[in-house]
Each structure stands twice: as structure tokens, then as C-alpha cells.
Image (tube, rainbow, N blue to C red):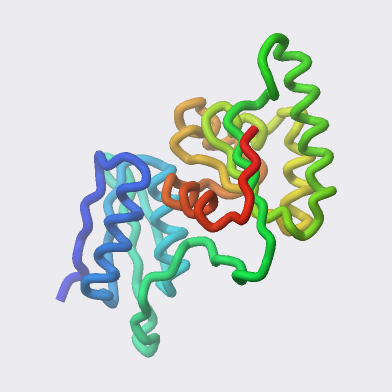
Length: 202
């Protein structure tokens, strides 16, 4: 029997991932082929299916990508889990939600310096710093050549999860220039805000 095909072409973020999640909840297929039409969807669907125990391969096809996922024959079907593991309830966890590459309004040069200083100071939060989520203009911080990139890379190396909106990267033409964090989708963004014990919005 051929593997079921889930056509997610034309669906906005995070609908392709949500469609995969629903299919796994409904039938827990041994194999699944997902069709998407953009690079962020390919990355997000691949990462989600891999997090659910599937071996994943993606290949270009006409109009986008085909993501082929197959579970090991001896692996039991599992209830779909979140793409990002939730911390223990007793742990303090801070999510920093960044929506621009500057802080404040009035002078972008000053705002850029303030952002650099802000990221350099985040390690002072210690183990409570859980995730940094970058959306809209904030994704520029994770791109090659940005003055703040080194600070983000240092946070990531220290164990902080950096999530970078794939739709935003695509909008700004930065998909190939991301040098920190992982491409993510709105489902992970919402989950990061929901599970945080505190959200710092910049």
C-alpha cells in the first residue's frame, strides 16, 4: 500500500505543521508524504515529524518539496508531542519575544546599540533564560553580518533555545542567511509564550 499523501501546498504557517499533527493524532500512520510549497514549511514539517520519531527525507518536486516520513517498523506509535519539550513545572523559564532589530523609537542607530547591549546582558538571567523568539524585523538579528549575531550565537551555545520565524525570514529574503537559532513556525511561537513563566517583550 502506498504511503498517504498530505497536500499542504498553499497553506500559511503554521497550518502545514498543524495538518501533520492532526493526521498523526487521527491515524498514527507508519509512513506519510507531505507536500509543501516553501522552504520554511519544509523545515518546520521535517522538524516536527522528526520530533515524533519519524525518519525524514525531503526532496524538491514541482511546485515545492515532498517530505517523506517513515517510522521504524518496530517503533510503537506515539501520541504527538510538542515540537519543543516543556520544562518542569517547578522551573522558572523566561521567554524573550523580540519583534524588531532595534529597541525603542526615535533613533535607529541608538536602538541598534541598545539591542546589542540588551542581548549582551541577557546571560545575567542565568538558568531562567529559556527561549529567545525572533519575529518580524527581529529575525535580522540572526542573519549573517548583523552586529548582534555573535551575541545570539553565544546565548545558543550556552543552552538558550533561539527560535527564528520562518515566514519572517522568507519575507525579508534571509532564509539562506540565518546563522543562529532554528527556523520555526507560529505554533512553536505561541507554545513558547504559553509555557513561559515570564515573557519579556522587546
